[in-house]
Image (cartoon, rainbow, N blue to C red; front, side, top):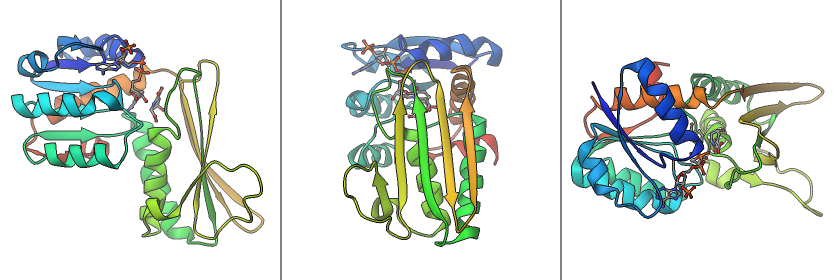
Amino acid sequence: MTAIGIYGSLGRMGQSIVAAMPAYNAEHAGGVDVGEDPAPLARASDVLVDFSSPAALEAHLAAARAAGTPIVVGTTGLNQRHHDLIDAAAADIAVLQTGNTSLGVALLSALVRDAAARLGLDWDIEVAEMHHRDKVDAPSGTALMLGEAAAEGRQMLLSETSVVGRAGLVGARARGTIGFSSLRGGTVVGDHMVVFAGEGERIELSHRAEDRAIFARGAVQAALWLAAQPPGRYAMDQVLGL
Ligand SMILES: NC(=O)C1=CN([C@@H]2O[C@H](COP(=O)(O)OP(=O)(O)OC[C@H]3O[C@@H](n4cnc5c(N)ncnc54)[C@H](OP(=O)(O)O)[C@@H]3O)[C@@H](O)[C@H]2O)C=CC1
Ligand SMILES: O=C(O)C1=N[C@H](C(=O)O)C[C@H](O)C1
């Protein structure tokens, strides 16, 4: 039985992941939350999952690396420095980072990449997302991942083309940009929509998460898969064979 340790175990995702484990015959190795040493759990686990906070990621990666334990990073709100830390850790251990562990969003990313490649720059791309009132980061990790997929499809860099939010006299939309809008409220688990807006027509590709269990099941599947992988950086489409 594979023992999975959870960083952020008392949170919404941590609790959903514990609930999902029995269906996959996975063992709960334990959890770490604010103010606790991540190192003992890393040594006691076959694989770790991190659904905590960007502020904790460096310490969690260091603990995983020191123990030689693979880690799934589901925490969002990451910046370039966090991604550099993930790349560095992936030299020594298997690391899977994703803003969304659901099957549906993995497929949506592939569809968005394909649509962006086929439609070209005459179709404007906007990514919209809505989440519950307690979400602390924006745009969501999933929205950024979908934006990356669209930029890849256009063979462009998202960092050079993204426009996050608009207010005031911002001027007309610049060709080739990818816009992001975030809504927050209530208990929405996670809605994402990618709009391709052309001359006189519009295509909308969307995903609605109805239950956090979809992320939890994907996280457990990703952890079980990652436990058997050599060092390197991995993504969800590799787990799901998409
Ligand atoms: N990749 C995916 O598929 C998904 C990713 N997420 C992401 O996962 C993360 C967690 O989401 P969610 O469970 O809803 O959030 P919660 O706030 O419910 O849970 C986060 C947990 O992490 C703990 N935590 C915070 N800081 C630290 C720290 N420094 N060290 C250890 N633990 C810490 C929190 O403790 P405390 O409450 O005491 O602060 C809490 O128990 C977010 O970044 C979210 O965007 C969410 C859903 C799906
Ligand atoms: O914080 C959340 O709740 C979620 N976060 C992830 C994100 O930022 O995309 C995934 C999901 O949408 C729920």
